[in-house]
Amino acid sequence: MPSCFWRLPPRRPRPAARAEAPVDYLTQIKPILSARCYGCHSALRQQASLRVDTAAFLRTGGDSGESFEPGDAAGSVLVAMLTGESGSRMPPEDDGPALRDDQIALISNWIDQGAPAPDEPIPPDPREHWSYVPPLRPPAPPVERADWVRNPIDAFLAAEHESRGLAPAPKADRDVHAWRDVDTSGGGGRGCSWTR
Image 1 (cartoon, rainbow, N blue to C red):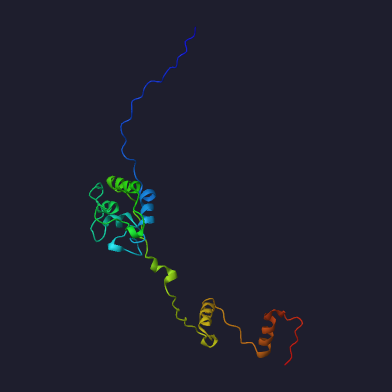
Image 2: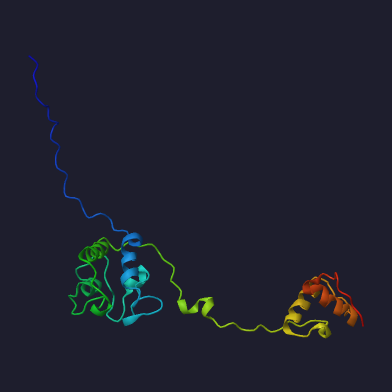
């Protein structure tokens, strides 16, 4: 009679407890800071002289001194401010809820892992964007045929013409000028009679 029993696989040894998974600054830490801290601590506003829009600025800290020493989250001013252990909480209560425990743990793990982060360019001050700079009227360029220039735009056109070796056509007499006005008005010169 055949034997019916299950053969169990051999037991595998249990893996040792894993160290915390590496925390990535760009994909895990920076989005938290961007969402919750940039409003008060970035290029535009730097409350308490603190910027957090790059890892270098974050580590440098502000009025309270260095934010953290890589490898020491427990002694970190940053973590103490996020948890409220410093006596005040960031972000402040009137600016919204505190960071979640998992977000604070992620930042703490990142600091304990040495706070690795790539070199980042310093974000420019948004107030220096070209769209906020008032336009300045450039000086009209000097031209050889000043008699042709009736306004500043003509000076720019004349300068470009001169740079290409072009000369303006002679001024049209009154009749031709009037005909050109009629011709460019959409009439096409057809059906229009011109008399002096």
